Amino acid sequence: MRIQKIIPHILHHNLEQPFESSFSTFRARTHCLVEMVCDNGLIGWGECLGPATINAAIIDAMSSMVIGRNPLDIEPIWLDIYNQYRDQGQRGVIQTALSGIDIALWDIAGQHFQAPIYQLMGGAFRTSIPAYATGGFRPTGQDHAESCAKEMAGYVAEGFGAVKIKIGYGLASDLATIKAVREAIGPDIELMIDANHGYDAIDAIALGREAAQYNIAWFEEPVVPEALAAYRDVRAAQPIPVAAGETWHGRWAMDQALNQRCVDILQPDICGLGGLSEGRKIITLADTYQVRLVPHVWGTAVALAAGLHFHAILPPSPPSHESRSPLLEFDRTHNPFRQAIVETPIEHHQGRVKVPDGPGLGIEINREALQQFKMT
Image (cartoon, rainbow, N blue to C red; front, side, top):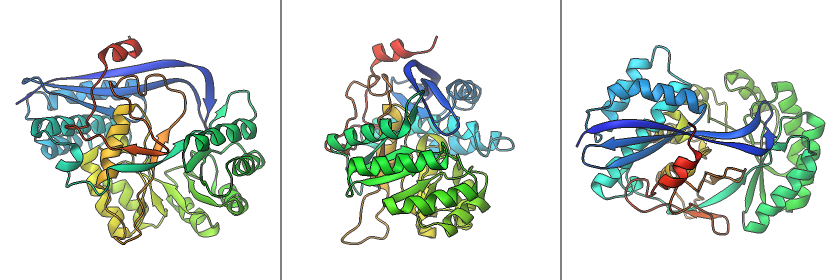
């Protein structure tokens, strides 16, 4: 069995209602999938976090190092690619592109051995994951507190026991939104806030101290990811647990943040940090530092499937009778191709999501939908 070709697919949809994070305006949903074809007919799929067109270009550049090789040589392929690009690519799009390739390799391995990825990676601690609904971006031109409270109440009505909202639009505005959402969802629903690194340490500390009264489960990316000293300051000076990690690609970046005690909760993204192979190493790091691991997920059903397999193999930390499962991030923002590109959509039932148990990722791509949303 040899890898015959690698095809990046850029999927795109212009949004009818743009929405904003603290620093960016989303006018479209654009994601990059990786299709890996073997000479025996097996096809593996992966996904890359981040800028789709750049990821696609880098995958094209990396493909010469992969074509002709045995797809079961996952670790050697990973290291060869990483080592070739490490001088300029220890983080960022080199790692995100490599992530898509690595996930596709694991998908092929699972199909070859007729086993789900979680089984190949050591076995599942859980096959059904409690999920939290991610949304709460600011719709362009709308009142954030009003729109966010209504949106989150809707997710609670669907059965979610936890929700995450976006902040970073200014202290007064954010506090008003947090208050409105807590009132809308009631006292028993977990509420997380994500600033998408929209504050400096001074404002993040002020926000955390004031928002703590609303029983916030974690404060995500309060400051820019490079500012590890600022993370330490925010963690020390306000009471809400600090979470981050989706942009700390690879084990070395994660280790720097963990060693400096920057976060209470680490949030690696399988499609960004280096794939499932690197994800297993992050599990060991988090366990060594005794930091809670709650992975980040953002993308299509391919990313969601990979994230579910990763969640399945996360060991309880610490193992106990009352061990709780890490929550699965379940994106609810508008994306018409998220589930359309797979034959069987990955949906929640009363806020829980089943881990696919078919070979590999356990998904089948809908070629018609893939073609419909593919950027030409």
